[in-house]
Image 1 (cartoon, rainbow, N blue to C red):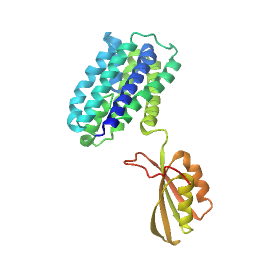
Image 2: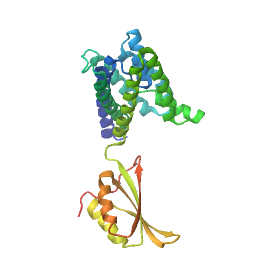
Image 3: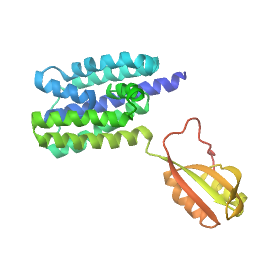
Image 4: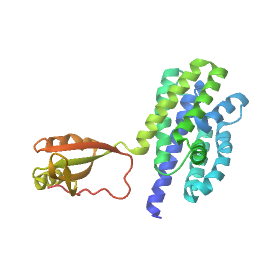
Length: 279
């Protein structure tokens, strides 16, 4: 385990937990707008009983951490315990501060954005703030349902309860918040500099194409021989680029006889091959 990387992980998890707590306590909770998952259950329970949200979020998540110990590994549990502890402490602090706004739409918009950024950072650096995903990942092998679908079904039931208890306007605002949090969280977790995998088929001057891609984008290509049913013998090149380099790649291949497919890449494990200097 790289100690420097692990220190960075915990620093970013700390930042994420504090940001998430700020979004909940100073935007969502004062306006009775609820997050999904175990945090949402904790918010509803706190609203009804008057118990501290900071305590409830920690207590409700403890059973799921025992489940995660065998399924997810020791390091994941340590990071998650740390994230939940920092989150609980930050929530306790922000409970003493005034709400930023009492406008529902502003609370949904900024609360959702801030919470999404916080949760996204925690997930990106190996932690977890909610036990719902842990249970879903364990059940998915037994009930053969995707994790996302299980979490969605749980949250649908949760927001129906919110609608019944607090009125359907609050339920709809909470759903809108959940959608916004999910979008922002996913973007932060995956990174804003999304990667694209490009597969280039050509019977043109392969060397010139590779050289231009390397010189202009700093990317190297993987090359192999292919054969088309009609086109016959040709070459295939595979290159990974950022979404911002896609326009440049289009300009390059437009000068040659190429057929190109582009796909999203969810994750890259290891180091992407890219030159440090161009030219």
